[in-house]
Image 1 (cartoon, rainbow, N blue to C red):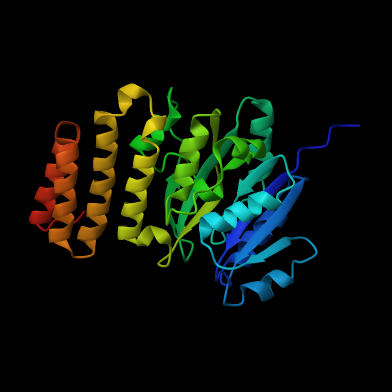
Image 2: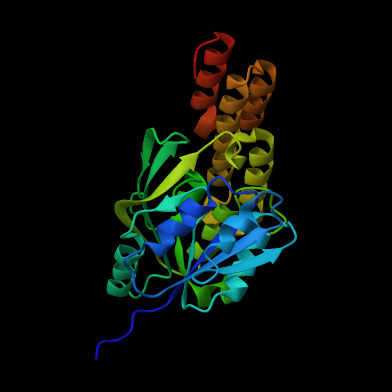
Length: 299
């Protein structure tokens, strides 16, 4: 008899997700990996989400709780998970059928890995392809890689599989963060376990108008909070100029979003903050962005 494959608990947080949650659930139930537990955490939905999930009650474990946010929902799912591995999928995204089998084969073949993700396809709400979210280039320090590029872990909250016992070491998702809580988790995991990435697009990320990524001020506040709280995870030599440059990059990204919404003065203010933080490492980038904004050029 062959060894039974390890159980993977898939946690799907859902809040007012009637328009998309069935697609996410069906994509997990359609996986060709044979040992899957599906946990959907209904985070206080007020739309038709509970009614849709009722159709899957024989195949899906549905947890209903008062609304507490994405981190709270993921944490409730982790607490209920019976598997040795926990996979995450946001309700508005979905997987290709081979996602878990390929990813678990990758982890089995590389038993030192504590968490992994796969490349992802990014699409618009109507399904139009937008980009391919690739694996990061291999580097000696994943922590520094994430600081330099917050989206370094492809798929993020819809692509990562984690050995469950690692949550006992790093804690759960930070419920005090209003956004980028996934980046915060990957940073904490990066210092306790090796990470691997399967450079095959097995996740579909759906960008839409109501996503948190469209809320610039909230994203920026949370991003700077995550960079500050995790500064001590960096090697000592990177906690100075490198860290300030990471903060300046976050301010530059936020400035571009603000500028595109027609708020040039506010965008220039963010660039000025970045310039104060990292005049040598990011001065040319920030000055170039400022010149483009003053010249009313497209960014």
